[in-house]
Amino acid sequence: MKDFFKNRPVIVLFLLAAIILAMAISSIVFEGEATPISDSLRAILTPFRAAANGVSNLINSVYTYMYEVEELKSENRELRIRIAEMEEIIRQSEQAMEENERLRELLKLSERRRDLTFVMADIVSRDSSNWASTFTIGKGSAHGIEPFDCVVNEEGFFTGYVSEVGTNWSIVTTVIDSELELGAFIYRTREAAVAEGDFALMSEGLLKLTYLPEDTVLLNGDVILTSGVGGVYPKDLVIGTVKQVRTDSSGMGTYAVIEPKVDLDKLTQVFIITDFDISD
Image (tube, rainbow, N blue to C red; front, side, top):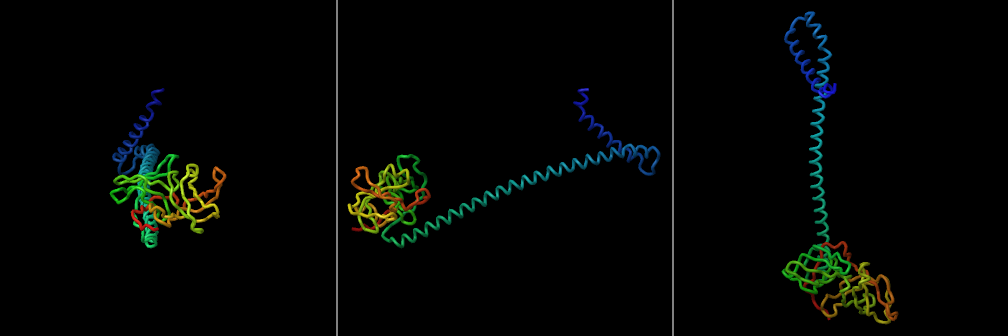
């Protein structure tokens, strides 16, 4: 009994083949005028013929369905490829638009600051430690870049300075790094001070303004510019704006917390000032 059920699919197929063969023979033998025997045989075979046709139609439907499913899968694969290609085109277009916008801003800066000579460079990596704020660019000494060259964004906002140079790469120390120190002045009052990085403020994306004159009155939003003193950095580059005035640790003096004008997190390209006119 167990073997019967085990072989049942084979038996069904055998019977189906026998029925089909019998129908074929009957069609040949009894072709023409009907006889009692042919009528009886056709009466017996008619249900089986209908079942065979049903099975044939079912098989054809299943095959058609499977074929259509494969067609749909193939079309979906092609659509996914086309969508990916279109998304890549859109990304490239967006990048091109962004770069064009940066170049337009640089053109405005170049027209406004004819005393500056620029080299454009892409940022290739960023420092991931908590002890420094630096990034690496894909230009170096082969492109005329030297240590302590000033770095700005396309709008001319002070971004940092070149701290190390290779043949085709350079490391830029940013405006918030604790190693930074440069001459600055308050645009509204024209008073001189020093902009410098601070380790505690660096994690907040800020720096500070120190060595303020005793009678200095600072307002939130005051613009801080490079002074150009010493001839290391160009004059009148925007560093940032005053965010807050605090008392120093001695309790005797004050310093201002500065928010950089450049958005370091969004930078993808920078402009290195390789030459400029020194102002007295």
